[in-house]
Image (cartoon, one colour):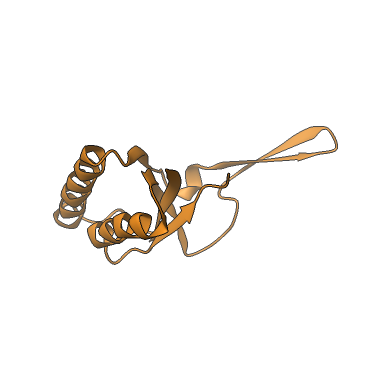
Length: 114
């Protein structure tokens, strides 16, 4: 079984209001339960805003530390799920369910190397 990263991208801005966020979280809870029951769930997590990031760059034997996201953009990685699946088609089915749960946010499905 291969592992796949299901990445959720979200726009910069405030957290959605409870009436929107609560529905999304309920769908995510159901999806995570289904992933666990199928033996496909490995790990999932949401991330704090990009403004909380710290970027490290190694150069000339030193490490430069800077605040903020690595790149500036209108969208950022907001959360992710790591799954196991027998093939890309199966991973895309789970990714489609995740996209439905977080709609209209996009979900990227990528296999791990190796």
